Length: 75
Image (cartoon, rainbow, N blue to C red; front, side, top):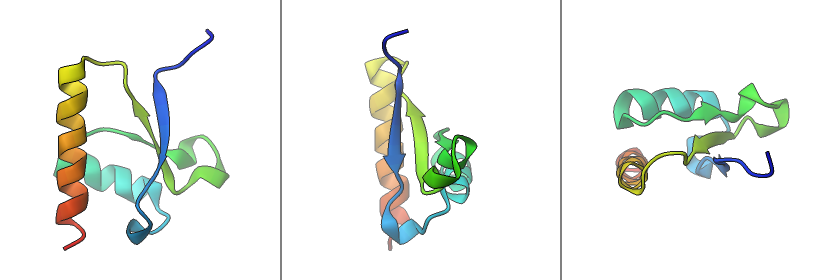
């Protein structure tokens, strides 16, 4: 295919460089699933892959949850 439905996003610096830990915590605490970047390369350990193959409504809900998770864990 000529396109994909994924974004590679670097996790916030204050969460360190552990995309796997970030993804696990986001799933457990924020109720959003992402794939750790380490699953794709040792050079992307501080990234997560986000799929946007969903409805706009679901994507907005997931982004709201991610924003709340990050804000809560920066306090």
